[in-house]
Length: 287
Ligand code: NDP
Image 1 (tube, helix red, strand yellow):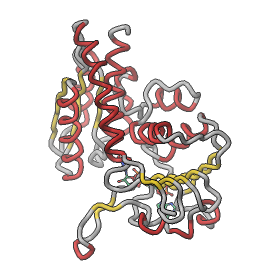
Image 2 (tube, helix red, strand yellow):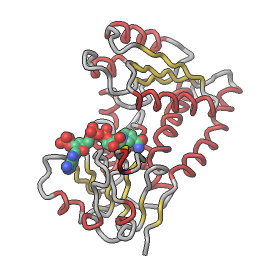
Image 3 (tube, helix red, strand yellow):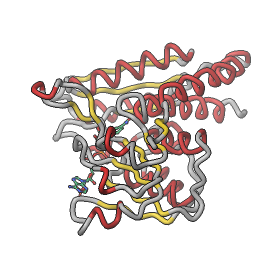
Image 4 (cartoon, helix red, strand yellow):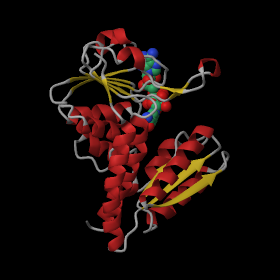
């Protein structure tokens, strides 16, 4: 039997509709959530992500400020701007679009953001809080995945969860969230020996690798829940479409639940950025 495909777009829309009341309640008390997005350089994918984030803010009634810098900007200029935004009462969330050009120290930039405005959840203080099971902001992509589990009644307690990928943005925070939720977690990466031996015993399998159709049906346990975080652009000779890290057509015949690409985890990521920004504004307003 084919797996049920989780509709991330529909869930994202449902959540965004529920945010309207929260934004209206803030507005009634004279507060409007505000997000500042900093983009350095002209990376085309980053430009698209930033444009989508700003558009999503607008649709949700969130004030947004887009700040664009040339690729050769001095790090001090970016740090000074972050300092200003930290002190700006109209801004509740600050996001620096990654990756940054090589001459800019990513860690220094992320650590310059006030932890109370770090809506991406990448500041060391917020990573530490998540590791201790008391998150202030949960990184948006894994947060979106947790919402998908919740919305689909996936009980994580005692489950074997395997994550492929150990990035600070996806793999590691995903692991912390699953541990906090009571799963037994294995994190695999490029140095993992016999990857399929791990993935084949996963009740929950999260792929965040960045390689098209990397997870094949023979790597998946029958009945598993498969979450595909990957966003890969296929080469023109293969149609140039977006494709996940999972061989969707084959794996859906083995899994019980699966996320498609596009229309799976992707729409949830920006949705959780909105959630974190609203949450930051609510905290500031003392709600
Ligand atoms: P990274 O490149 O930072 O991490 C990829 C991970 O995959 C690394 O830990 C790497 O291991 C591991 N890996 C690479 N090759 C193998 C292999 N052969 N076997 C096992 N593990 C391997 O990527 P991100 O975490 O930032 O992103 C992952 C994917 O998710 C990308 O496609 C990205 O576009 C997408 N993404 C999607 C988002 C969304 O909103 N849906 C948001 C963020 C990312 P090692 O550490 O050893 O190098």
